[in-house]
Image (spheres, rainbow, N blue to C red):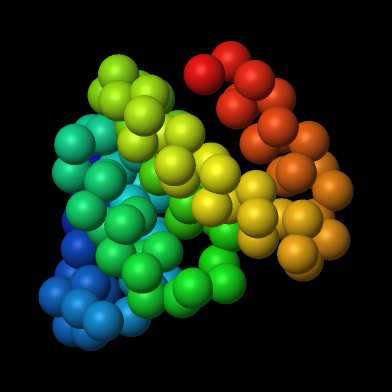
Length: 102
């Protein structure tokens, strides 16, 4: 069976500046426990869409898996600002909980 990441990798190669393709690839790599490779794509997805909370949440979780708590904290803080500004209560609660552990 072909890993999901390979499907999304082809999409990223066809349109490297597409933040949705980058997020989908980063998410697939995260699910495959390929955290080092996920960072690049999640970071580019977040950069590509300044008001998109989800890549920042997953980027923070990826950094936690890599033992990089300071970077995780920054990603979670950025995501929390967006969650509050956009009225996303459940992600806000999750982010506050995650930040309380760092």
